[in-house]
Length: 286
Image (cartoon, rainbow, N blue to C red; front, side, top):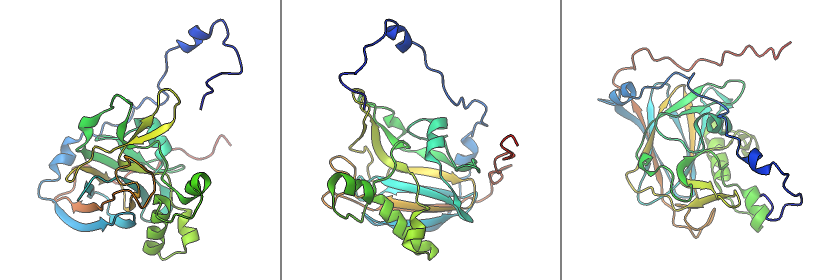
């Protein structure tokens, strides 16, 4: 946080320096526009091929073939979730929240893509519908579906509060991936990564710049929907913070399940292809 009382006096041109207009770091006009119409049309006659109910304070893995859709839906009560995505054939390729944030902003919605990490950097999934898109940004600067938080984890919990809490989303995702892949917990943990905070309402305080959470506006029946740009392995944790209105990682919060459904379109999207690997030649100037 910035100090309330800086140790150094402002220079004479401080106001002029602060008044310099910002420049967008990564203009995205060069990216092909997704054009959601064909994706919406592809849902006509689709078939649900898989369904996974993620229990409260737990995580589950699920598979989404390339060219399929998946939805995460609130059921029973307001609940946020932490989403990991991996290339189903190579766990080293996974969702890159930092670059996704740099390209699309702090909070995602329909039309935004979820990108994979370097050196792959290609589209993993496209958000095709978001029933909470009406929320926008509130008077506190809060928005829904953030890529600014990491995931609640037992290490930070231990650092700040002490104790051994095992239902943080990091541990939930670790257990789920270990079970799905048949690997030791220590190996699985290394593949768990920063998340899309599904349904979570977050922002940064304007006075101190601190990451905050507040009660999610999600209600049963709300969903966020994705189109898989490659064969995906997903991991979703129903956060132990519930709707994150009061506490973060606790057995006291009211928590509810989340529903994941996978849909196969009746016909493939015309002209659609699996996301291509990034075109950089990886010579790094040598």
